[in-house]
Amino acid sequence: MIVIDENAARRLVSPADAIDAMDMAFREVSRGQARNFPVVRERLLPGPDVYGIKAGGDLAIGLLGLKIGGYWTGNRARGLTNHQSTTVLTDPETGCPTALVSSNHLTGLRTAAACAIGIRELARPDARVLALIGTGGQAVHHLEAALLVRRFDRILVANRDRARAEELAASFAGRLPVEVVDAETAARNADVLITLTTAREPVVQAGWVRPGTHICAMGADTAGKQELDPAILLGAAVWVDDWAQASALGECQHALAHGLTRESIRGTLCDVLEGKAPRRASADEITVFDSTGMGIQDLAIAAWAVRAANAAADTAADTAAGTDTGLPIHRIDLAR
Image 1 (cartoon, one colour):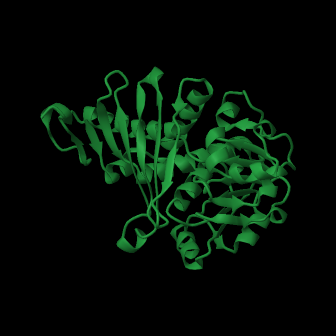
Image 2: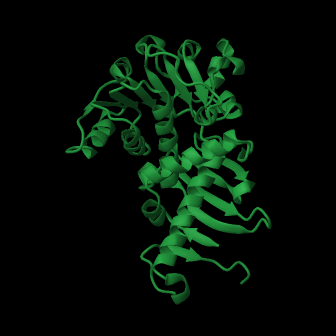
Image 3: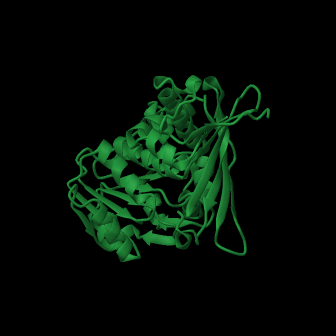
């Protein structure tokens, strides 16, 4: 079994790689090759921490496994990231584990890549103002990925802790002008709006969103979490990654009580890529991608990391010789 730690994962998969991996995974879902199994997502009562399991498989390409992890609110004070996760890949024929992959960085990459694909496929071609509400650990990934698929002339960031928003803006100094604003200003001026918070009530009101805006709703992935006023979804064209998850864990869970139905959404982003679902109908249409994150995304990006690790080892001819590749990758013989 190959073990890829966090440092190796960061070096093995780039933002561009992640977009390619997610494009492939989404298409496999649309084709019926890849499956996402029911999500386990539970609060660790009595506290606010969350633990979950996302699993799935694509037996046609030998992919099977799960990601375990969640969100620990006190980790930042410990010098750790709040999001912690690990992916286990298994052999579909035997059930034996083949890889253990640290997935903190990879989760950020795959989430941002899904968002970027949504922007690429659903935002107006002339979208030039990108706004992001929420500047936690995944914010940098989302900005990097969005800039790979579109050219933006103006970037706005907002966070309830303004100092954290200013830290993010400073990290892009010399590359791009990033303005720190409040949430309402971000939403009112956005051509593309990414929401990436842990909110449990709306941080974006319907009256703030102008015609033609594309919204990537990335934060709601647990029952009770919410970033958007339900009226936004009722007045918009909505796509999801997976309807079962979106209706239970995403923004759609709240809009259902106000009249949203499965039949009223445009479809999945997976089907958009395969031409089975429509894209934006007009320049004035408000579009929403409600993303909850699928298990197949985690497996696909972990498998990408494993392939990259094996390729690096093969290129350096290190596997047989036992020399150092420079990557902290380890192999475990479970028979011992």
